[in-house]
Image (cartoon, rainbow, N blue to C red; front, side, top):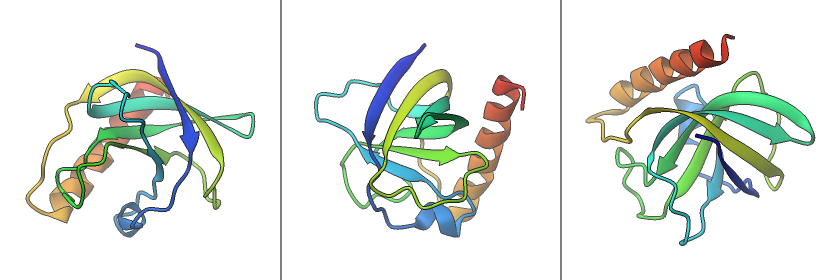
Length: 123
């Protein structure tokens, strides 16, 4: 698997930040047929390579919209990147996108996904 998604970072609701995992949101084209799910990803931002974990889908735990998004938590990045272009390479599928009953459950699963992605990249 090595699908590449490119797009501009758009403003979100900043929920990921509140959960301790700030994400870069990229709205996907209606024609995007990338399977929904959680992925270990490699990111190119301003010609610098980063690693992270991404969700492709409609965020069923938040359920504020049926718009398909790419949300990327970038490891070791602490800067404002709104409006910047990202190139995101889906390197490894971790799991299906699913709904959690509460934000604490979602937060625990994100932490597990981050650890799985770090193991994949040997970080």
